[in-house]
Amino acid sequence: MSNYSHINDMAPNVRRRTVAGLKRLRQQLDAEMPRKTRTRTLVLGTWNIRNFDDNRFMNAKRTLEDLYYIAEIIARFDVIAVQEICDDLGPLDRVMDLLGRDFAYIVTDITEGSGGNKERLGFVFDRNKVRFKGVAGELVLPDRMQIIAGEKKRQFSRTPFMCSFQSGWFKFLFSTVHIYFGKDSGAKYRRRVDEIETVAAFLARRAAKDRHNHILVGDFNIKKPGSAGANVLEDSGFKVFQNKEGSNKNQTRFYDQISFLVKENQLQFAGSERDRGVLQFFDSLYRKTDFAAYRADLKAAVEAKIVKIAAEVEDRKGKLERARSENSKNGHRKKITKLEDAITKWKLHLTDDATLKAYYLGVWRTFHGSDHLPLWVNLRVDFSDEYLDELAAD
Image (cartoon, rainbow, N blue to C red):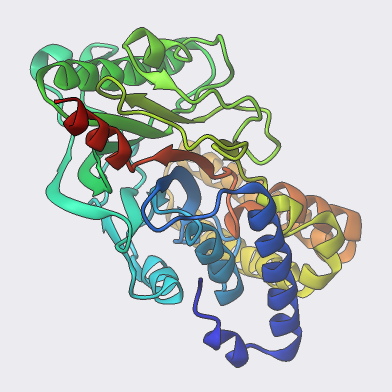
């Protein structure tokens, strides 16, 4: 349960909106997700929380209201892998404050380079239920397994992260990935598929040599069942939770996956209708019918965009004045025209409600919730009866 005391500090209209959103979300979570148990089961999941939280795309940083919704969802998991955690850990620390002292996190350093986007991977876990067993590491490929991209050999764009955990009787190495996206065809798509194949092969080879159970989750950027890369995990021996609903906001893509490579008889679902699923939180949050309640927030975000673009125009004009070659001048003129067209487009959002609403539904809400939906599985972790039966048989 989250710490709700900070809601008292909100402006009255925001407080009412937040309370209403939390009540709807809690009802949805109660209806769709498994209940956490003290010792019998483990609710495990994965969630790509879009650009959490650096505002590089100028859609406004997440508010305390947004963080409450994120904390409410995470609180329903015993352990959850998270992707796209950005350089500034302040927002994550605020979520942890809302979750309370029973929860902890482990994250990587940021991944440098254009493909890495300065993102972190990590795990958030309930210490009452899950113990970190002391082993953590990023997966670095040996030379013979490095990914071929053109004429270069590469490591992963965002280095996969692994930690050892135990819950009840169940010990496992938990790995999470955020696979390179690139494009939906051509060489960059092939690189995406190569990353999926490589991480699956790497972990399968490791699992064959050790005694650990392996769970591999994350954003694999898999387009759909049957597409290149979709069957790689199964081909490498992993048992895959088959997500039939889609995990992007419109549930048309199957980017996110949960898969297992475990020892015999050590993977058992809890045995209920809620053993696995995808949480479509837009059923409760940032709904179409909530647009009017966010109109002022949306306009503030648009106005900030306009100010930023206008500053870029002035910067370009200064460069144009200093430019010497005609090619350089033409380049600056084209950029200025493009930026001024963008200002015109964004100003329309301030006067046309239909345009503003399309921005709210299509983009804005994905930077306050996410453009990915959380996946969960509910696993059995108490095998004491079976152990006693074995002792009795001896």
